[in-house]
Image (cartoon, rainbow, N blue to C red; front, side, top):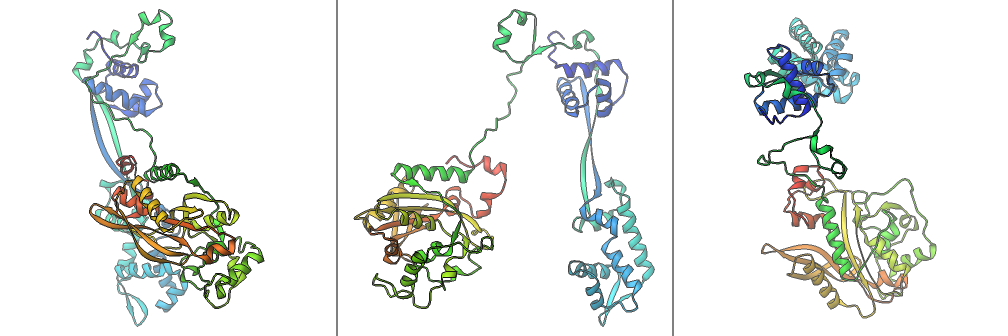
Length: 494
């Protein structure tokens, strides 16, 4: 056995097993005899010895049943059916109405179902027990069952175990693996002299080679024919990788990034974009309005301009929306429903300066969560403001952007948006089909003129999650935000 390739923990464990005659060594015995406190050291040493054929491993898997959170509560205050039964015995006429007033709604409904299973009937709204002794016996068995926990599953009554497993939060199972090792004849035959512990070098370092000590050292041998584990490296989340890709495309095209606050006023979020104050998007089911702060101050001069535009079109030649414009509504605070609210404020601060800006940021809408909707998502937006900007420039810019994103076939078709005219919907060809990926248009005079903007403003945008679903081949948007490491590792690099 020259050149025995064992680590020090493996040597110590095998030597102790040679010196002490145990037909089988439990984990606790190995820890105590080898003077270890870390179970991982003992299990690792046993695994190494097993690979060499020096010990034989035995594993027994046991399942213990223990109380869960609701089970702990039941042990403290009693099972729900027990409490209902105790109440029935104390009242002269246990009616359904009385039960519902005595117990909370979340207990009364399920509780009646449990009583029916015990044999309690409902006659004219009155709870009637047909066999009280049988109910008492069943309740005692259930209580005794919970009191006996934790216990190994094989020692429990199957019917009661199945009953409690069907009820949420009362019991849970804990699977345990019990390991033991026994020395083999091959392990017995190893020369104890070879099991003396020594400093084993597993890595060459510059410091080691600066002296001659390495000449007398023992080096650990490695079997290079064994399969190695694939190293797991950190990587960007697919959503973050897609955001970075979009950023790089915009920057290549000469755009600057715009980042701004989530909390905005309804005035900037909607009024500035010529969205009427009675528009359905203003309702609570679409917008997260805030109570703190409830409102944010806006200048009366700015709101007066919006008021004029909304009510009669002001000096733009538009007829406006009619009706009355509320300053209080304009000053209500909310979580932005689109990133255009920040873009329009940027343009208002720089009405005379040509610009190309973009943003990829979060927006919020009160959506019911399903496979295609989330209340919090990302919006991609690009804006060009310069003298002479026109529809042809917009279409050319769109085609350039989507070509850089990997979609060379792009087409546009007429659409309607409240704050652009003309308005376009953008479609790209994906696997032979035309898919709508965003909207675009030129800001209406009702949007730009109150802010002193004289040059045309081209704008387009789309939902990032929709693009991510397309790129990653998903049919459920929620997959993007589930911490499924295996799925994340399998995603392509974007």
